[in-house]
Amino acid sequence: MSKRNIELLESLADEEQELYLNIRRSRIRKMNQVKANFCTHISLLHSINFSITITTFML
Image 1 (tube, rainbow, N blue to C red):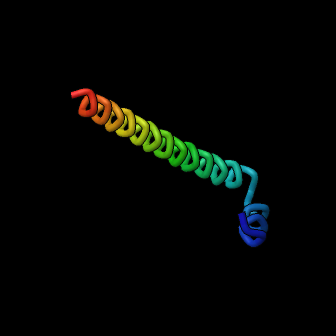
Image 2 (image 1 turned 90 degrees about the vertical axis):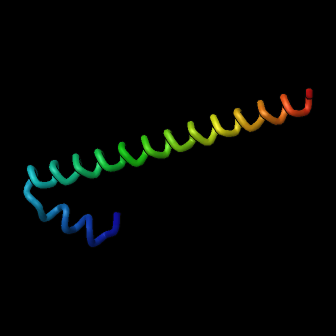
């Protein structure tokens, strides 16, 4: 967070600060979930590709 944003956040009332921080935390959680889902899909695709390669090799 930039120095300017921190200063602006500090100028808000406590309730507004809490609301802002809760929204930020929620967005970060969603971004992390998207990243986790993406990594899971990539891992699954890699496993499928590996299985196909092994199966093809064995034929």
